Image (cartoon, rainbow, N blue to C red; front, side):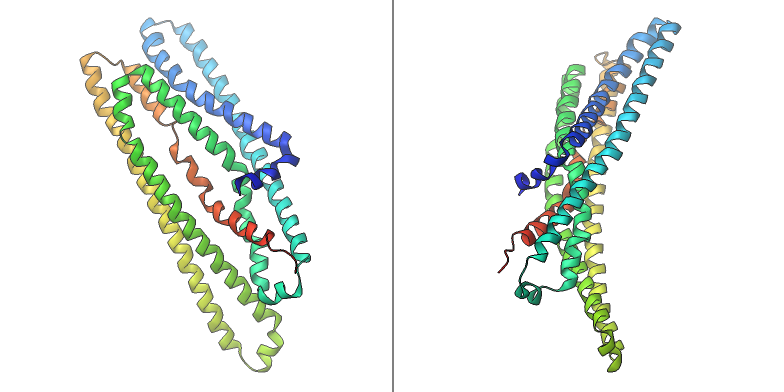
Length: 310
């Protein structure tokens, strides 16, 4: 499934290279900033060389400007890449639907087809943009940040890493839950679309037999079912975000407390403590959660594209 999905990047290789390269450079700059902060506090400030401090500050400002420009490229051109792939998939899916037999249309509600071609592909565009770069950058920044933390203070880095397995387990668990929740949500919105299509296409018959109340009651059932599915999905997402927030803040608290103790012992400078804390913010393990809602969409699209005309 993943290999098949990556074939859609081929017509947009140049755009993908620009987006991916910019994202990698941004991540490398983020890894460099903690070292710069540590050097600034431990070396420049005690030296008292104001001209040097101003020069280094201007250099850091230029790096922030470059990083800001690259982040604009990642956000705009990256989303353009996702939109292009979304458009290609929508075109392919529509062409595939046109080749289906009458039996396919007899067994498939029009609202479900409309939902697959419209709603489901919105998240696929986000997956096309964020998926590869988030996965690579999350791994790169985690390894890079851990290496930097080890060079600053081995004991503090190892104690911090104790919490990481729990964070990985939490992300994996919530990913599975969110996948199931989004699958139900997409299915229910397809039922809502199907209900609207059936009612509107047959409105003359509905009004002729004064069945408006009956149709409203059926739509209300589907609408409430979709509401509940969406609430369940966002409840899982909220639990995930809150739990990850708690674990990451616990890591920061451990760093502050144990780092302060090491500073009192004279084995950790203030600059190293600040740089270590800054470095933790770049080891973004929770980046992978962004792509979870889209995984349900891609499975549903492959199901439709695998239907052969008969």
